[in-house]
Every structure is written in C-alpha cells, then in structure tokens.
Image 1 (tube, helix red, strand yellow):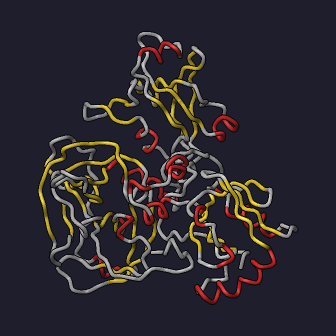
Image 2: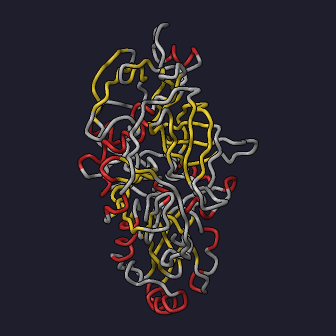
Image 3: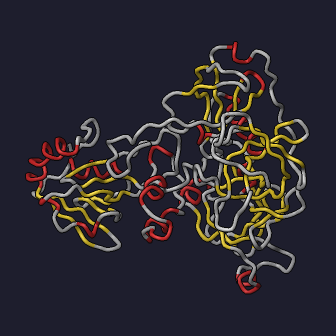
Length: 452
C-alpha cells in the first residue's frame, strides 16, 4: 500500500490470502480486494499442497471482481468449473465455501438469502447490487463462492461490521458477475456505466405540484446534472423529473420495482448495462413529457471529481518549499481521518459529478503534508485545504498546478486557498535553494514533480 502522507514511499509488504472459484475456460474468479496491490499471486487447490503462480487477467474495482489465470494447465486437472446460476430469491438456501481466518482447511457455512439490496462496496466506495446472507463471512473467505442449487449464486466479499450487526455477510450477486463477464468478453474492462446526476426524492405533494406533475405521476427530481450531460447530449438537465427508466416507473422515493417483489434504488438499472449500450428514459421538463434513449459513455470512475480506489493506485504528488500537494482521493480521506473528522470541503466535493473524458478530468488539488522547515513556517492552517489558484491561474488538476509553478516569472509563488480563504507565499529563489535539502532529508523520489 502507498503511504498517503509521504506518497513517494511504499508502506510495508505483507502476505494475505483469500478464496476463489474456477469458472469455465480455466478462469478463476475472486474478489478484487483479495489481489489488490499484489506483488505476486499463488494459488492452490483444496486438498493439494502445491502452489502455482498466477496472474491478474482482468480486474473491475467498481464491482470488486477479478479474473486470475494460471499458466500451468496441470493446476486444473481433476477440477470442474462452477456454472452461474439464476438470480437468487429471498429464502434460497445458500452455502459459502472458502478459507477464512482461524485455520488452513476449507470451510463451508450454510444460511439463506435474506435480502437483495443496493449498497456500498467498501473496496471502491461505489454502490451496486448486494445479496445479504445470514452465514458469517470472515477475512480470508472473500472471493469464494456462494452456491445455491449447485450453481454459483455470488461471490462472498464483505461483512457488516456496524454496531449491533451479527452474522450478516454480503455476496456479489450473479447479476453483477454477469455484467463483469460480459464486459471483459472483448478483452477490455470498460467498467460499470453510470449517469452523472444527483437526484432528490419527491414524496412531498408540494414539490410534485411545483414541477407540474399529474396526480398519477411519480418520479425524482434531478437536482444536479453534470455539465458534460447538458453540454454534450442535452438529454438530462437540472430540474428534470425522471418518470420512467428502462420501462420501469420511478417512485417518488427514487426506487423501482425489483424481481423480489420489493423495490430497489433506481441506479441499479444503470449497473446492468455496458458502456456503449443505451437505456430508455421518460422525463418531465417544464410540465411536458419527453422520451429518449440515453447512451452510456462513461463509467462511474470517470464521472466523479474525487478519485475512488482502484487496484495499484499510487497517489501523484508535487513538492515545493516542503509543501506536499496531491489530488484528492478516497484513499487519502479514509487513511487519514476518522469518520467524524472529515473536512467539510472534502465531504462536499466527494459527491460532485464531473462527467468528462478521463484525460481532461477536473480534480481537487490540496495541501496534503507540510514537511517542517522555516520556509513554510506559519502555514499549518492550510494543511488539508483545497488549492484554488496558483500564481493567478485557477487550478483544477495537479498538472495545472505544475504548469502554474513552472511558468511563474515573478519573485514569489502565490498559492491561494478556500475554506479558510488565504494564501501561501513562497520566495521562488529560496524555494529552489531548499530543494536539495528536502530531497536528502526525506528521501524524496525526484522522478516525479517539477518542484524537484
């Protein structure tokens, strides 16, 4: 894992283990977080003491799924692939197979499918379908199969560690696995598509009246739509009311009917699709109904301002005057703050949508670390604060930050912040003279960053 305070360093290495299951075509599927940041991977079969070297073929961090392969076909002797089953129903008897902590032998637990929901995947921070089971899932069991009627019903991947929870585990359902396998059929991982919008429920009759909804209408209000949507497609705009998606009526609470007979968050409809596919949408705009097909051009990573976790993520950084600047990532937030201590500005932009091409995507640059020295004396108030302007240039990425520093012909570097508003001023000549000291004192990697 990287060190988010001193991002030129890599944290200690350790050995960990997880579970997996053999699919057709000699592919092994597991949870992405099992092989996340791996330096080497080895697999062994139940009942065997021999280990075989493996490698990652495909990984979808958003779905917390990965395919690994073994070059030596000997590994697959006397094995039988597990076939995908149908979507599970509430009450289905399920067995989970894996190698949880507490021993080295295969463990089988039995329970039932107790809920199908749309919830957060802790690995990436994105939401997708989950299956809740009452069979315990412990560390090491992740990546193993959940089996219903002899077929794969899901991949075990996380437990509920909230206060009061007991024997609550979660599996990645067949629908998510199928989306992932269809995604990689062209030998590329395109990810999970999304629409970059934020919505508001319309349970209150007054808000429905204000947006000219008829008595038999239900839906949700688009309270924020990315500029990419409005400028490029003009299909979904702020102030629209989403009435129907993929042929399903949207409820005033933001849910749609689900096969279990209950209702589920409308966003799950997006996760079933592939990039390049379309979904039908009916909406209300200024009291008039409109219908169209929306083509998915972006995945959920490309639609967010704050970078979510992906396997092998290493934070980019820039050091100037002992001040370490980064682009804000979910990993930085989770690794450096307690849940009730997140800076307000980070929470605000965490949910911002900026649907743009990944190569030109806006990012939030902030001062992550201050390496103590007289050159930056008195600037402690600006640690973990967002940079908005450098030397007269508005900053929306670390590359823009670098260019603003590099192109400065003035005597001072002026770095401005918001929340609190203020500025850091560094003498350019003194900053240059201090570079060698910081490199030597903190063993900074000079292969990145124009400040070094």
